[in-house]
Length: 396
Ligand SMILES: [Zn+2]
Ligand SMILES: [Zn+2]
Image (cartoon, rainbow, N blue to C red; front, side, top):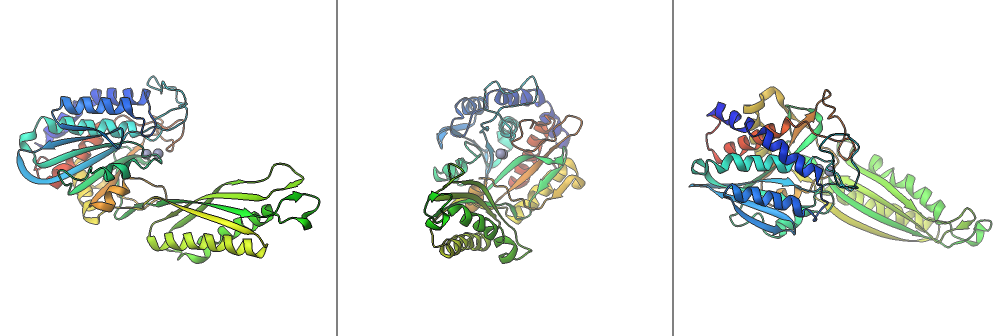
């Protein structure tokens, strides 16, 4: 069985590449994945799965009910591209100006379709159910949250869910697994410092919010270093400051916008409160007013440690124990966290770094690309994870 598993997947390679390239050439942004989801639904229907379209607007769900009773496992891919131009001169480069698959979601879709193709031909050997979740809008739109709200984890109730992301920091052939925390909560905030504008030559008649903003920037950057346990993680970045119109005008207001990253609710609340404390204190010391708005983003992504071990065990059967890496959390975000808030599961990384093929660029770079060898490898990893979870005995 073991050999035929690898062989059966390897035989799909050209087909996987074709699907990936079709999607890559026609990138669509979050909640606009109309053609991509059509392509997904067509293949799932061809494979004889039960298909639900229009979940979370453009999401697609496939269901394979096994012939024997058992648990229900789900796997998930994101489908959206990014608003940017592609710079790599490849024959399958984006045909749509201003849109590009620069995060590898095209590969995620192709890989999940490969898993569907694999299992569709052997439904009689499946104990339990397998659900395919193709979601829209991972890049900031929170498509995962909407999928969960629209009941993707019900009917039948999903017992565990697995997701993967291509990973430019890990060599092709390696699999990265988070033990628990994988990615950060991605919150954001806006502060308005409200002073009193006037002529730049008469500061004593004004309240200068630009100066107050300068103080506030340094205060905010001392929050993590002086309030958070050095063994915990937190990031605050002020990404945008706006205020003023000319050299000789003191503006009425300055606005500061930032992002806040954390791996625990304690650090998250501490940072949220400390930022407001700094704004309040600085505004008060200058006799000014302020407004503070904190927006919660994607929650922290937390793997179930048992499911992480299951992924490591299952994938090791394909790539060898030496190619499983337990990786540290990073402060990026991922809306797969919404599924993991509800049910156990694990998110893992598919190494994509290949110097010879030039797949070394970071996510969201105009030069980002994948090594297409990871398409069959990704299918194999998901097949093995499902096999291990449902206890099918395919890889034994
Ligand atoms: Zn991305
Ligand atoms: Zn991504």
